[in-house]
Image (cartoon, rainbow, N blue to C red; front, side, top):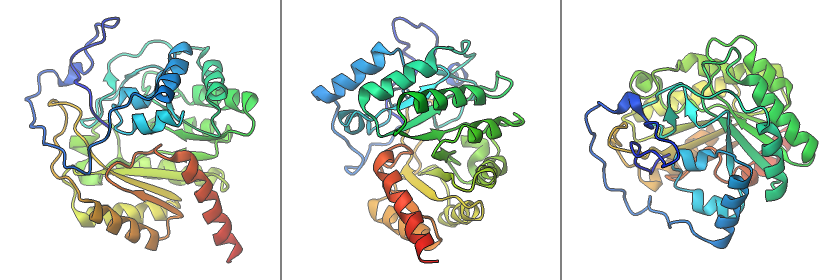
Length: 322
């Protein structure tokens, strides 16, 4: 989730992007294999999408995380909104989103997100956020306001939220689930043995339990989680995470290749070939996930709208066969 150099701030914002990583030794950046490379964006529809987002003064994870699929998605007018600012209170070793002390919440943001959804004509929208450990509820009530604003402005649009873990934020998850998104996604990101080096501010079993609790609170809710590979995980560890997610009744699993944003981030330890992703997808389906997306360029919100249609159909088929 990946591409831009991290230590060169934009002219209008001179804050260092990753101050916590500035003094870390440089890590080697491996050359990407041919199956990872993508065409640079630049079509007229891409420019139109960018103009709408700029006009509404909205942040997207597509840009902030350097997603390799930005050209493909924005040409289809699909963008993943990143609410609550562009600055995260966590410092994950894989992530290119700016870290530091966030600014106060923008109370007009829910209305602007809803306006952008209408202008882009989105049938399905994905809303994510930075971690906001500085807020008493981790930003859960702001998520709820965004969901409510979209519902009011675009009643037929289905809503997927990709939430932080709300660590030590009592009732935060309940607030988001009560707003009735169609899909609740929370990414485990990696296997438990890699949390200390890759995701040190998070706790594996807390994240797993969050997904389980969401389904317990609303059985009609679709739940979703994602993993990156190439961080040094073992094959058997990935299979164990699949089992853990199925125990938590998670419906949809995504698996994609980790791509190193800069020399200050965790290195890519292995580029997983496409055929291995196909094997992982087959195993995950056999374990009972309703939907699986596992390719080198899979990301949480890539093809989210089309996948949601398939997800609903898979649940209906399962229930029809019971």
